[in-house]
Image 1: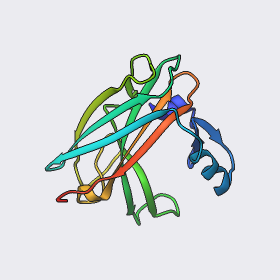
Image 2 (image 1 turned 60 degrees about the horizontal axis):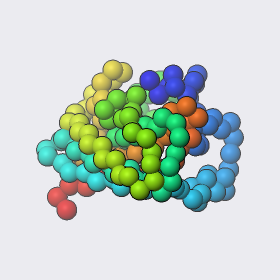
Image 3 (image 1 turned 135 degrees about the horizontal axis):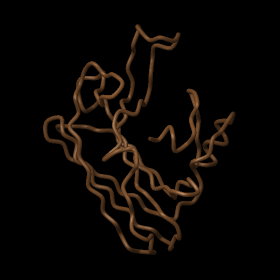
Image 4 (image 1 turned 60 degrees about the vertical axis):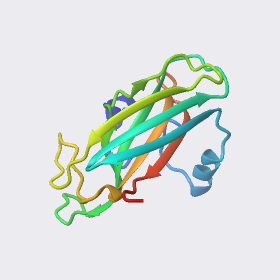
Length: 170
């Protein structure tokens, strides 16, 4: 779903603020990260066994026109796979599951000061990831990170993003 939305035809493929980047520098990436944001995105989670329960609070500091969605992803921090079909066998921040799916979560009109809360959950399965499943190579939730972003569905502009590594037993 996300591949089609962005028009990805091959990997690796870099996008910043919803726009394809053919080549860029670390300075440009930092410049984009330092931009002011007019939306607060609060991200929290709880775990029960291998189930991850995510709560995202979206509070705009301005009123935005257009249709917006909240996307939440569970990514695997890193793993090695020596049987890879390419020369690359070490992988970092691999998307494993979009909550609830790749279409994202619809947000109501983005009105200044009005918080919208989205709750999602997913039970992770560890071992034997394959096309069509959401399994991770690791063996514990500490191997995962939550990534969330608020996006204008038409322009693809990203209004705010957040990430949070998972930890249990804290």
